[in-house]
Image (cartoon, rainbow, N blue to C red):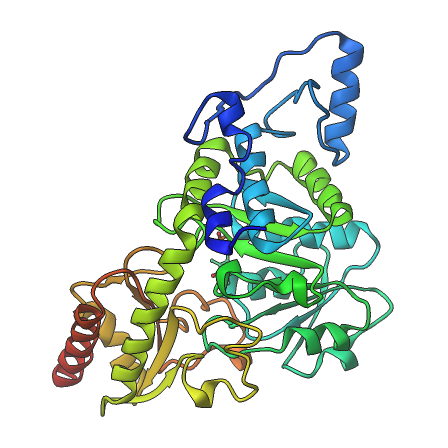
Length: 390
Ligand SMILES: *Cc1c(COP(=O)(O)O)cnc(C)c1O
């Protein structure tokens, strides 16, 4: 077995030389040729119920199967150490499919550990998909379990306060109920939840996996049984990942380890610089000892990642800072090549109920690949300019 960086470069490309090509092929076909009606019908039946096409079998229709999309999924499976992966149009479409599969399986109750990404919190709080949610804090999972609990959902590091969870302990607490970890922030470069007992791993591939801010996607890495259920939901509801973004997301996988490590190195420097600044009241970054009380960085997680949040004295100051960045961009999203800053309470976590909303004094920064000194200078200048104006 080769190292993880080698796997990232070659994952999902194992058959390319045999095909006589070197770069990833992009197949845009919306439909596929059929032989007889009977054979086509068999293929349709297989794919619409979550199956995988056999060699030489027609793939029928892009909503049921696409080779470029399947290649990206194979790449993600390699990196997460999963048997299979199923991709979707966005991270939210991926979460939707998992929730619909849980509901269809007769287990509509979800235990969700807050904080979560604002959109995930929102879809659960609305009950739109037929789920019933109990929101808990870390350690509250066991007491919230019911006979109809179909899923436990958690993030670590969590969006946006970077709270870390012990995945093995969470799996034990869930007492056999499947645990899904949203691994968007950590990426498989830093953390592989399936190895720790999670049943499902969710990614907003829009973020680090693609890494360039130009393609949306979501993916779930899991076992063959869940994968089949998710493919069935995808075939029926149509929230599929299409080939163009699948191609871009797959291309992103090759550089994922180097990007994650370079961005992490920079984030560590930025966190230290902000922590030493008088206008910053608190820095939330898993690489700071006070943010990692259980010692999970270096054990569960190879490193602290490249997302950090910081707090300032007042909400007014926090809201004023993003207007003053010049190198960074004031924008939601994260995990791309450039530094982004945003105000979670006002933006990404806007739909979250008041009792669970992030502090209005908090800003979240996704550190990019710029020179760390330039990022620090930009953020410090923005903080000082906002403070001087206020
Ligand atoms: C962005 C994000 C999502 C949602 O993904 P989309 O691709 O935007 O639908 C889910 N979880 C986390 C942690 C995210 O950052």
